[in-house]
Image (cartoon, rainbow, N blue to C red):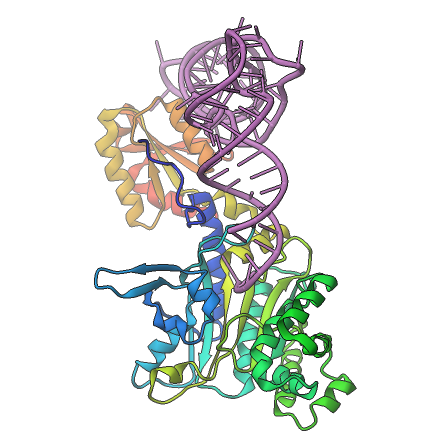
Length: 433
RNA sequence: GUGGGAGUAGUUCAGUUGGUAGAGCCCUUGACUGUGGAUCAAGUGGUCGCCGGUUCGAGUCCGGUCUCCCACCCCA
């Protein structure tokens, strides 16, 4: 039985060329988070199933997660998302100075059929603010999101943040005659309004929520917070006032990508206030790049004092597809970063001298790749040229005997021979920025 | 879980009514025995996804199966 050369379906396996792109993206995202004062944390990949059962949504936990039983008979999940673990960390941390601004790059798992923008093992970016009930925290996490997109070079109009508010939506449904006990169902129906054809949705919605389908359809149609009918339906609503403040703060901060859409719901059950998502406005990537919202009851589940929270998850894969769609991954990222110098070794007789020479360069902070096979020099030069390295240092019998090294400029083609001691300083001086 | 498409060299692909498995790129070697990208020439490399059936003969036709891609569901 031969072993397969493929990993399990949808599992994360990145060759260096892919890893370089991911590192580039992750670096930009981390930098954006840091610019708002966020600190990085980490937590377990494997969690008890109960952690997610209470609030994440039963479909996500029971049907779309990797479930297993450990040797002690405990039901475990490879985490499908990070937020419940974060809530537990906060609840169990003892004294923390508020507000908490934390970010993470967790690997998460979902047992679904892979397709464009979706795999079974994926890395995302999580960014949360805890301990701030004020809408300012919701505003700030969206600012981080927008900053990420801007720092990666996304042009205005290529992406859009759409947002709504769960409490506003609830009040709206109530005003339109949908009783509170049907709201959870109404949200899922609302969520799909924009994702299905009119006929399909009509039939499906009638089946799910019967006579209230019309009200849900009407609710989903609001995309303007200044809509007079919306104002009439929600007279004196705190949720509406809060959402308007959210909108005004974002535009005051210079965010032009965000807009209200009552059809935004998001799938996670624990959201209690603002909810939002990030989309590609073009047709190439239909899948949400990011989803998030406010969860004011999650930390309290662990006993002790409750704490408000708001944050989002951003898929690095979906973000990457977006960037590739718009040509926003710089060419140099894909081709890789070459070393500063390649040390060519003529024969085994010079190898010890070459090792010592290369170590001296590395001690100065230079990046040095040394040939290990003593292939003929033509081969070594060819290998060096392929990496794009700017200099090749040749150590042959003549050089080794004289304590010198031949330095060839791979760009210009010229070559000089200098002492090994001077080479480090020379290479530092001629290092391309 | 449901539907559509695709599996042939490392890679991108071609392969005619069923008749000896091909090309470009890559790689290796040589022209150039201490110097790269260019050029020229040669070469390595394939259980044609897997199993079975039809046939004198299957990459090609039929059945099954696996995998990947895309879409639905849901979601990052």
